Length: 333
Image (cartoon, rainbow, N blue to C red; front, side, top):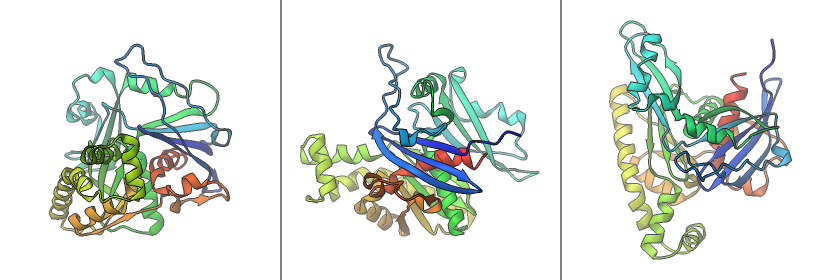
């Protein structure tokens, strides 16, 4: 039988940047051979006929034969669904209805059975949907040559793939949470024995914090970003204001799972740009009253010498989704 891909590049396409990781598989070992922060991808708006997708300019060191694309689709959906008994074709036909989508014909769907139910035991099914037109726009980023598109998935699921590999490498089967901070959206998941039991997404990200700082200090975007990076001003108030709705939902989600599963969440692993910011982690830690850790997604794979330039090495937490896009291909093959 033909072997699966052994050399891939994962692209995490976000609002302000494209984060890329190249990874090889040799004799069961996964090694990062290159990584880079690229300019944000220009993706056509399906509703704007004058909008055009510009192909990605991929540096030669990242040109693996195949590519995994992790992206946050504006109209995409991701849900963890429950069905009584075994999950079969009868239930699979009901996935679009359970996801609350009206224009079913305009979407592609994918499901993954997380827990197979029997009798009175429920099946847990992870379901994802993306608009067909949006997928076509994404594929135009790599129109010919290498890398060739191999997979496409919501960026939060790619990030959580990397989280699960990290937990496996650590031998951690305790109840834990994971939050992936994107530029405009974030996602939160809870795992018990490394199996997802809750998944939530939020309209909150780095841009939310930047916008609140701009508004509070009456400055432009560039100045706000400089203030956040330098830490020269006390911006705790606008940060807390931005975080408050998210924190409220995280507390509700955590408490619900702890009561339902009769457990106690041990830690929340944070990735993405906001994971760098100590005052964000501190607010989350104080509100949830548990450890909030900015984890390193490169820690669960090998890294070749010279693979990470300084621009990447100082921002490791931002590459969970790009690494997860690679893992989704290499571990499946």
